[in-house]
Every structure is written in C-alpha cells, then in structure tokens.
Image (cartoon, rainbow, N blue to C red):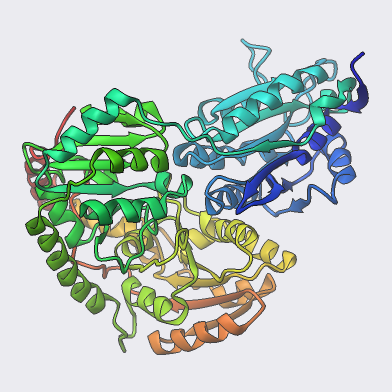
Length: 614
C-alpha cells in the first residue's frame, strides 16, 4: 500500500521544492536557493504558512517590488550558470502581473525561474474577488493568463492533486538545457489551502544533473567538413558556453585549431579577455578587432548563441558572399536559424566532438596574424577611451576605466541604456561569469535587483552594479533589500540627467532632441534629483564624486567596506566610444518635413542592401 502524508497543496509545493538537489564541484547543494515572497490575500494564508514550516531548509526572502525580486531570482540563476535557481510567490492581481516583465526577461534569456502567483478561487463561490480580472467571454481567464506567452510551461492548479504532475513537468523544463526558462504555476488561493493525501515518495530527495546532448554523427561530419574547408573561420561564443561550463573546453578547442573568438553579451567572459585569440565583443557594440574579422569570415561557428540582431549587426555584418554558418546549439530552433548547418548538442559535448573531428587542422597562420594585429590596434583604442580624464563631465567609458582599475576582478552587473554597449566593448573580464549583463531583453530596472541575485549566488565575490539615472529611477527599491539582508553591493550611479542612450539613437536617426533628456521634456520645474540622499535613506553608504580621480578613491574605499555603497557621478550624455561598433537596423521614417530625417533615411536604405536575408 502506498504510504501517504496529508498536506495542503501549498505545503506540498514547499516540501517538494525543499527536496530538490544539484551537485556543484562535487558537493550536493539545494537546487533552489530560496523563495522570494511578497504576501497578499492570494498567497499569505496558503503559501505563507507552508513556507514558514520549511524556512530552515528553504529560506524565504522578502523584497519591496515583485518585479525586482523576480529579477534577483533570475540573476541568481544566471550567475549560477543555470545550475541553481529560485522561486517567487505573490498575491493575485498586481502582485502577480508585476512579475510578467521579469518572466519575459527570463524567457528571452533562457533562464530558469519558478513563478508561483496566487490566483482566483477555483470554486468561484466568492467571484469576483478583490483584484480579479473578469473576462465576460471566458470564465477560465484570470490576470495570470498574461504569463502564458512568456512562460516555457504554464499551469493553473485548481485541485490539490494536480500539483503532482505540474511540479514534475516544471522541474523537467527548469533543468532541461533546451527548454530552460520561466515556469508559471498559478495557484488558486482556495486550492492552496485544500488538503490531499500525497504519496510520501513525491517528496523523496531528487538530484538533478545537467543533461549533455551529444551531436548527431551526420551533423557532426557535415560541420567538420565545412570548418576544414574554411580559410577565414571565426567562433562566436554565446551564453550557452557559460551555461554548459564549457569555458575550458572552448579555450582548448580554439588553441588547438587557431580560431579567433568573438563574444556576445551573454558569452563575454567565456574566454579570458587577455587570451590572444579573444577578439572581444562582436556586432553593434563590437570591437574593431571582432567586426573586421566577422566582415571577412568565410565560416562562422556560432556556439551557444541565438544570433540576436546586436550580435549580427542586424545581419549586415557578415560581408563575405561565401560565408557559411555552423550553429552548435542545444536548442534545435537556434541551430537552424538563417540557413545554418545545424549541430544540435550541448556546447561542451559538441566542442569535444568537433575537436576530435578536426584533429590536425588549424586555421591559416595569415588569418591568425591578422586577428592578432587587429586586437593590438583595438587595445590602443580601448585604452584611449577608458583613460583617466580631468573633464568636468566624464564619458561612460572613462567611468568604466576607473571601475576596472579599482575593482577589476569584480562581477560587473548592468542591463540597459548606453552602458551595456560600452561595457561590452571595454570591460576586461578574466573569470567566467565576471561579466553579468542582461541584454537579451535590455530591461531597465534589472541592475540593482540583479546585483542582489548575483551576490546571493556568489557571496565571496565583489559585485559592482553600474546603472544610469534613468534605470535607477525605474526600479531601485531592492537596494534597501540588499542592505536589509546584509548583502554588499557597490553601485556606481552615472547621472546624465535623462535617457542618454535613446537620445543618441534619436539624434542618430535624424530626430530632434525630444522627451529623452530631462531638459528636453515637458516640465515646469527642471528636476534636480539628489541621488545621494535618496540612496542614503535606504541604508547605503553614499557619496557624490566630482571626477574620475575621486571615483577611483571612492571605489577603493568601497571595496574595503562591508556595507553597500552608492557612488554618484555626473557624466556626459552625448559622448560614446567611436571606435568599433556597427550599424543597427532601426527604421527611419520614409516621409518627414525635416531634412535631417530624410538624410538618415537615405543612409538607412543603403545599409539595408547589405543585410543577408534567409
């Protein structure tokens, strides 16, 4: 006879999550690093009571904003290379829908997170309850249906026994390299409190190990033949290299075969910046070293990347008419993009197999020499851009240089605006994961919450959050959470008084300065925000510095401090690194009264001719 235990559905969820393990560096650790919770009437009674009972083995963390706590959970998974993850629970209504943006972020970036929003009453007796969204044509709809398009798996639990197959399916998705992403289990609030006799075996400790998909023999042979015939090959390293923990394998592969490496935002740090074959960032925010090679390449080996438009220069970067793509990716849809030769496999397993198939083959010496010369040229330009200055308003690049010199071995965290482009070009990461950028969804507001998640995943590392004033204003509340939890962050807040990145894009497409910088918005009183006082009110050590020299001094002090620090510096909203970079497809109006727009439209139409379609 099956042994059972009587629990509420919420208690079953908590016990199940607490019983999931993984193994990292030979040590068995909990798969879930904890649960983020903001309680409300849709989850405080059911999930609240359940989480209290397991608080010693599955910690619960309280945040100030549901989107922020979800960002922290996602950053935790990313910083853990998807080997560990977190869950998030909220009430119904706005508490739940506040997480939809974060769900989209996790979906785009292929990062595992478990969403457990409260939902309406399954029995419908008190309908419509507080915060319930009513669809007059469909009685099964609730606000949580907004999660459907941004979840890898979605389920609504209306009976307590349904949680058994739902959680099992959720775990398969969360831990599968190809399916990995957000899972949403909408928990009806009455069902959370209902009891059921669950099999004791459902709560047995379970160890999850990453699945390593091996390549198909025919796909491998075809890919190897294409690479062997190349004279000018490059390898684009994407986030899949890090998630597969294939960084050592990547280094051995490119050293054996002499292939230059170009880095995506997600893949940066997979190969040490100082490695002679690392050409740095590629694409719209690419180095001149990478982009020159990409333009000439006759073979592109894309490893663990979905080839987003910033990576490919909107598919206008690869100028060689004979260029071929080999896409090594655990996701079949990614491997088949743009008529690439697919090699469906885990990044590590795929590179090992390719290495064996290419035994004895190396890229021509002349190609390697061209790569080396290009990197030397780029390093000169990068040093110029990041050099210390006495300018009253330093550039983002000069601030990056100061951070690099003061705390260069830190994990740098950023997400949106102009900073990701400058960091992609200029940050010199030597250790896997020391570059943590959310640029798949380019979500303003991720930075501080993301920094908190990184610190939870990597408590022994210095974590530096670089954030603009616009993004800080969107979501800064988890700064207080970091202080409350005793998790030290060093936040460098660059104040350019508006949305400087989009202002530059507006100017670049011929638009007038309008509604981006604060001075160009509709206002009766010009805002003068005191970020020092604001951050100090949340418990951080704060100061404003007058220039690069003061910034470096403040950063050195922050490194020695155990308290979270916020350092504010005014920056120039218009200056950006001119070296490197590439065109990006941002549609310019065909019709305009302004000659600046018409001129940009003509340039835009010329660039469209360079795009490779297919």
